[in-house]
Length: 513
Image (cartoon, rainbow, N blue to C red; front, side):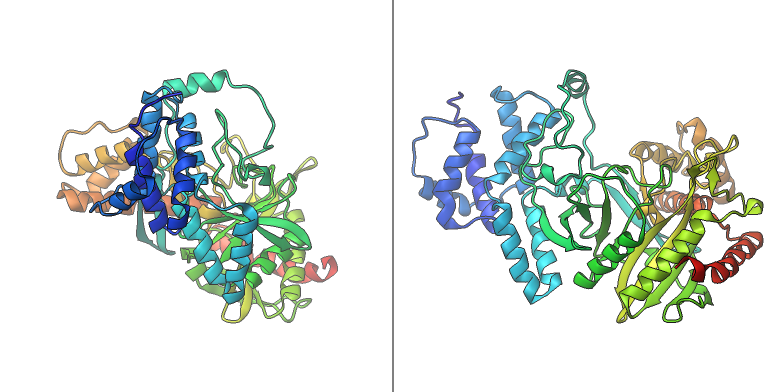
């Protein structure tokens, strides 16, 4: 037990900032002070708690909650209260913030009370709570490099992801010696709520879930700790079961946007390569944001004889998207189920579309639901995960000529026009900018041809213009990434093949509904 009082200023400031954030009240000052003393193992405190906190209130500029948590964790390392590991710092930080966060029952009661005022009032409150409690890592997210860039398909969102902490050698060594445990079963399980965390599994003591019912089943709403866009939420099944796209998926997505009409919600595809990073837990992602794909227009309208109440169109987008609209959820569900069933079996060898290899399926969809203009809207993005010798990572996956920018899977967020790019690009693109300014630069070999082409087109540029040129060129590459992932290409042959599928769909949809 340390007798150090070095924590005390940080504790007092944390309490004041938590009050400013609405996490606690002046009535709780003595209680939360004692809880924080216990967590940090501070003893022999002498002083007037209430007076010292009142004095702290008068300080002109207080550090933010994330900065205070980091400082207290650093002091805990110096005091040898915890090991100097990223995970142990996070565990302590989450425990400190948990002192200020109500139990799940109270959180859900408050959410439901606000929901009766309006769904947006409820989500605004819960989003603020998730930020203020440091569950959403606002300080780390601020490190991300994010911008928009114009493309042929609208303004894409580009993000270089710098928010997740890098592991140092001590972290890596500790992970090798961690005990194997299967609780919680995965990062998305409801059992993460309040979980202390361990080496290799994030701290979730300050994590809270909103209880929902979707499709007569228990589901949960939470926000992503590393949001990529405003109110980036995750909706997860209570059951730890594999991702599946079926009729019930469409019913749940549309029921969600009926409950929360200001949010969109979508599901990653349910097959490897074209699916998300976690296929072992049924979940969706949503939020309060309009992506380039949301704003994209339909450039070909068609009808399905079996579903006269549903309007259908092909979206002007680099990937292959069918947009459905209807007043009734049930009409949309049946149409989406029928289209998906037809697509799962559809073959067009001239377009390289094979639905099966032996009994292994390749065709599936990425669905996205919205409520717009008093109609329910559902986008079905057609996906195929087949591989070949020429494209071992996937025929409809980023091809090798764009891997220097984006090599990873194209999940739901990327599908809608938000590129999540790797941290290595910060330094690498900086060197390309130097080259465009006529300065000595160390260009990675995999960027060299691209950089040379940029220089040949643009010549020597001022710093600001060089940076803008690189940003635009990255967006152009991401545009190609999405075109690679499109099963029906945007050229004439691809669009003829897409219309051929629509005719097949019109012939077959009735019999599969």
